[in-house]
Image 1 (cartoon, rainbow, N blue to C red):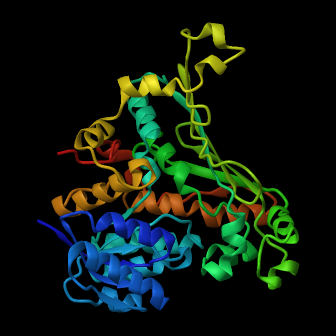
Image 2 (image 1 turned 180 degrees about the vertical axis):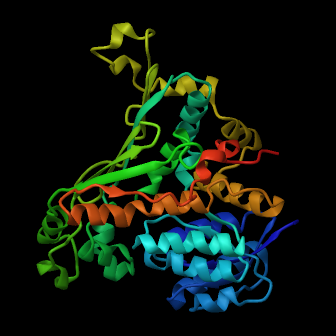
Length: 407
């Protein structure tokens, strides 16, 4: 396949950003664009026309895109609640799906996604860009080479002050507002869970067994609005359900534990806090520090001199994917992560190879959201995590890397 013929559903901030990346790629033709809002549709049309020269079919209905003649790939960048529904309908038509990140709304939807794939054979990939971060890939490479020994625990978070985005959700037509009013859960787990799952070989010889989730009170947005930092008077008396901090602990079959933290409604700086703990080494994203057992004895009680030593390790242990990326000299979105995840998907489509983040990964990562919601509702009660592979994870060791096909 020389090029893919794609449709794009969802042209909000994230959708427009990724569309701008896609139109730069010579082997991607955008034939149709869709959003509920006419101004966003027109923006998408203008981007494609300027970059590619063609005027794509435009519509407010995703069904029109799925049924548009010639489409063989659908990029889904719309609101979280529509992700699985749109994906399933596209897969039933034989259209390969690139799915933007977000949690599911019920366990049954995740099973439906897997069942559709197994029935139709139509591939789907979650476009989790953080799996392609420079330091996430470096740590993965080091783990594969044995430098961490046996990995025992990983942690990470989506830690991002979103108070303005949420509080102005009506004005900005952003779906997060209704979610924060009506739900209390780990609503955005995949930025941290994706890279961790690759490190721990989840669904490839290992799997997540159970979780517990605990939520703090929900005061951050209320205070933000009280201080007059939102223009919608209807929000003044709203009691938001979404807790300010949600902590989720996951137990894995091979003995590892994972801690996820959602922290989006209190003042803070951005971090995903990617952390990997092994019997021989530790990596922490927040200070970009790698601590090796036996090598840094002098710094066991005062580690500041080691801060940012990850840069030195990155020169030696850069993942082959990152070396390829630097050699090509390309750039694009979130330090290159957007470009790399899109290229990984596109190459898998063109070459007919296995999706780097496949349907089983997608379902396993998305299901954390509804299970965390149930756990919180039940007083932090444990919830069993389904094995969406139905036992196949034990024999999928050949796909342990599963991130990119480097030319």
